Amino acid sequence: MRLIAVTRSVLLAAALLAGTGLAASAQVTKSHGLAMHGDLKYGPGFKHFDYANPDAPKGGEVKLEAFGTYDNFNAWILGGSPAGVVGSTLDTMMVASADEPFSKYCLICETIEIPADRGWIAFNINPAARFHDGSPITPEDVVWTFETLMAKGHPFFRSYYSDVAKIEKTGERQVRYSFKTNTNRELALIVAELPVMSRKWWESRDFTKPLLEPPLGSGPYRIENFEMGRFVRLVRVADYWGRDLPVRRGQFNFDAMRYDWYRDRTVALEAFKAGEFDIRVENQALAWATRYDSPARERGLYKLEEIPEERTSGMQGFVYNMRRPVFQDVRVREALTYAFDYEWSNRQLFFGAYARTRSYFDNSELAARGLPSAEELKLLEPLRASLPERVFTEAYEPPKTDGSGTLRDNLRIATRMLREAGWQVKDNKLTDPQGRQFKFEILINSGSQFERIILPFVENLKRLGVDASIRSVDVAQFQRRVEAFDYDMIVTTYGQSESPGNEQRDYWMSEKADVPGSRNTAGLKNPAVDKLVEQLINAPDRASLVTVTRALDRVLQWSFLVVPHWHSKVDRVAMWDRFGRPAITPKQGYIQSVLWVDPAKDASLRERRAQQR
Image 1 (cartoon, rainbow, N blue to C red):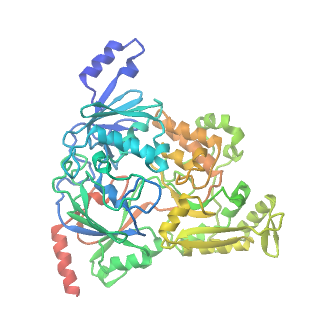
Image 2 (image 1 turned 90 degrees about the horizontal axis):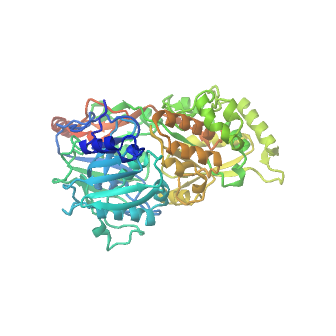
Image 3 (image 1 turned 120 degrees about the horizontal axis):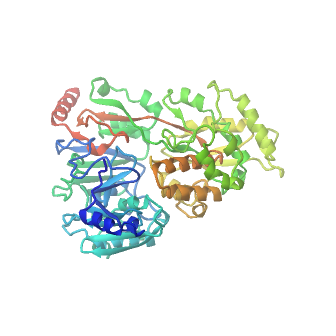
């Protein structure tokens, strides 16, 4: 059953135009939501998302951790280390549900209007929508936000929204985006993601500069207090305009949230065990397996839970910066993958907690497996001149070992590949024809605790004659260097969703390789990839999206941009025993916004902690 409501007048107009050839472009749907492909899960008049408890009690204060530091509140420009929590204070036109591949529902908007070909979208703003100072959210605010981000914001915005032709006020409470193309189905959804900022508030401030005060917000929380670089305390807005909307009901239940910034993850873990903050999402298997024991845990004061998730894992790995001459030969990049012993690392360092990542879209139907299908070949054959032959003839698999720590066979393969690429070993050093040793640096941020994982890789590289070293810098310097592409190799993640789209331009397209701050961290420039990315963005239906994503995945796999790492299929969450959580977990896994402080548990925990003292 189709859940998008179509107005009677629209149906009548479409009927009158039938047979004229104009019906498809004239038919306009008016709706409470929009799906990327297919139908919406939640129909008109839905009460709340299934994974939110509408009866969750409001109240309580929660303490949370943040990592690194921050120096300003402008999260939309290049430079500085902004406090990510500022996003909690600003509403967007629509919000995504966590139990669908890619669907959005009205928040600031009351309804949307969109033609069948998605050549534009209009948002009808809810007359109740307000900023925290009581001023209404207007079409002028929306237009100013978009135009400012495109002109003065992070370069990412100019790429992500490059297919927007114009934005304009088209009614007292209506704003309309017109698109350069009617084939980019995602565009209507992603313009709805933009936070709407107050034009009036920003008029007296320079948007291009770091912001030393919290901006005027409109969301469920506002920043009450902060100490730059150390903490931020947010309080729930008692008269928040959207509190009773279906997309907000049962969420944002804490009266206050305090985020404390930690520069060292080990220190943060000890602080959690001491009760300095309440919730910790653990991303290190070693810490999860060995470092959470304490008298408080033995008494059940905090608990560990593995929450299943079905998210697309994306790709994490050691990323080569192909702007560096040493990594421009694909044979070299492939050879070095043989020096990483994942099986040993998983057994010795991760307690067998991970699965090996082999696809940029792993843990989903989007991942390329086996040889290309007939549908994929239709996309790949015209691009054959720009593609490795193995895209067509082999199924990619990362190198494997027996997990014993002995890599002789793999290192022999690597040595042969390096020799074919013009490198040779002299006096235990891998050198080029000019006698220069193969040398590079792996850049990490000082609090990442990745050093113990990288060191075995470095030692294996040394067995090949490669002089690899680790450079550890603070978070701010790491961010600056990554934005400037000032590194040889980094550890990074290309996050993916079940519905990839415009963000792929920033990851892979040639034009982004030289744009500071872009996410094309590998420096990839390949016309075939550019073509596939555009085909992915313009995929007309889910089946086409899956096909072109798999084709793109194959090309990326055989380009050897990274030494692939691993992924987990659960969220590891440690919580002090004072919270309630809905019975239903969405496909996206753990979601903090649906938790609440359980009064009975909270009182019991306070009593038990008092007894412990």
